[in-house]
Image (cartoon, rainbow over all chains, first blue to last red; front, side, top):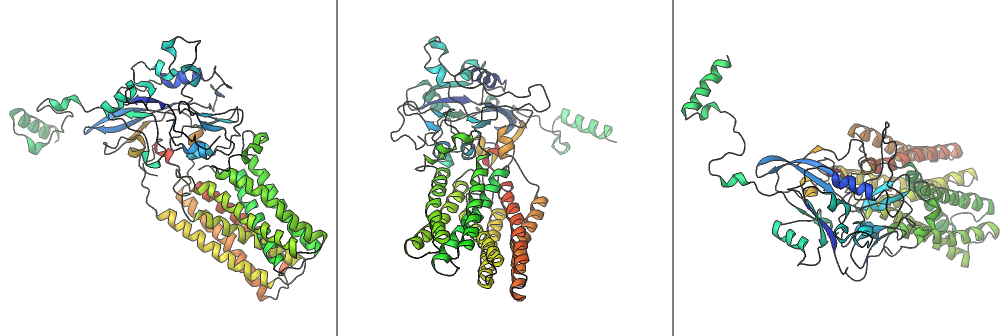
Length: 251
Length: 315
């Protein structure tokens, strides 16, 4: 049913991704690909893997950006997958009802048996969370490992999304973001977590924790980037020495 | 946005088909067209062929066309579903009007009402198709109040152009349909130019800093993409046309879809409808190519916000 659930979801299950800790190792992307290749539906396509045009659907993509953190240029690794929005546009645009949001836990899913692969949901999503699987002819997206989190065949400690389990640095957390007392909610509160593109009004549930402020700021006089040697600023002996050397060598 | 040919053919062919259906219904019911069976069969037949060919073409871009019947179910929330429902409903009154015209050579009373209802449903269907694009907040160039008027006016203009061609072929006096067609082409051109002006001048306010939420940074730039080959998202949403190519294609579209047909029809009127058939056929051919280029540009000029994640600075 692609109208949104009439009642707000009882739980708001989602992920919290720590941009401070993520090292861009891609373990989460790979474990997601693996789990969803042997799980509930047709395997995520992986065509021409060693050929000229490898292509296939992945549900989790890790970007790497350069950004200023505290006036210092740093690398930020950025995992991007479905944010399981509270009012997702991808659900309302679906013409067949294949795209839906679960009432009990808020997980947004695609029914692979009714999806016609029209791709409109991927146009509606600002996050690029949905990919068309050419081998299966349907749209695929992060399922929040709905087939793991309630799976009694797994040990309780393993009943978390594959990406959360795989992360070697603990950059990913899973829980109920609708419960203000949950670990994830407390984490978001403590670190000032944010959703992406809140302006669209889709109310993303997944939260990102911004990179922390740098510790160097507390050490007085310590520069966090080497300042370029500027001849006009020499006011120490060493400074004047370097000025002279610079002049001699620049002839 | 990647221009899918099946969708381009769908919107242009069905746009012309529904436009033709509109004018047949309106002009037929109000007595401006001869209610003669062969003329009715040819013109309504052409309308149904255009509409049906368009709709069938749209199923080619689906991963599972055999499940397409499910698209009728979510009309409460989805414009694509509403378009499917409207398209289906439109066949009924238009089909009945065709029956009245062809079998009974009668467009009065009940048949007339069906003709007008068909005309109304035709415009509604074009509007629903346009809303599929206009409702998407993620694509600035489409999320624009001019999109629906452009689609409707182009549908009506190409539809009446096809009607004028059929009128000429049947040796009826083509002067009035030609004047109507020229007027509609002018309106459609003005709307399309206004649309292009708007999207080219509008400020791209989404930034890569907003997309990643790293707004504390003065500048975020892409260090490395998540994958070494383009993925579905980049292929579908990342298609970008070089500005100089876009400008050239725009010129071709303006000439072929609007100016050439207007000039040819003007020439036809000026020469006393002596060469109507060849001139109207040429106009239809020119407009066909022109509208396909225009629709292709509609996709190629559209930029999705997801491109920000892939290193585009503004969208």
